[in-house]
Image (cartoon, rainbow, N blue to C red; front, top):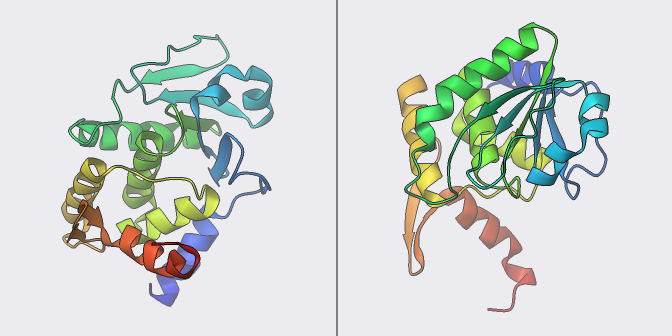
Length: 198
């Protein structure tokens, strides 16, 4: 990361307030106008209003929208399966998040667990509108919500999206005895290896 990009990333993404339990709770603040969470958060109207949420992106098939009048709803009907075409929604969801922010609102992007589908959409948004690489976007979101783990099919689509946006790839897929995984998962595993019993 260049020093210029480093400064831009932190200036653009640093939240106005810190959610101390964002790693373990159902909701994490990705930027001051973007939240990532699990499905149960979408049922907590008091919390959403307190956070200033005005738009809810529901990236599931299995969870219905509550359709409360205080919120705009966007349905992204996807299963958390590697073959699900999440890339079809990268641009439209990113554009919606950006549009809501320009109107001084905030968006919650959720799926069932807040781990794969919603995380992938937030990563795509950061790449498109904050001009950061896939690796930088993933690391930023993981810092805010460490439980994220997009499935391998979503990684393939994010890698292609990065190539489309920037003409390069900062994450690679690696073959392993258990199948293909992104190199970021391999690095995380090596980092944790001393604590694992293999």
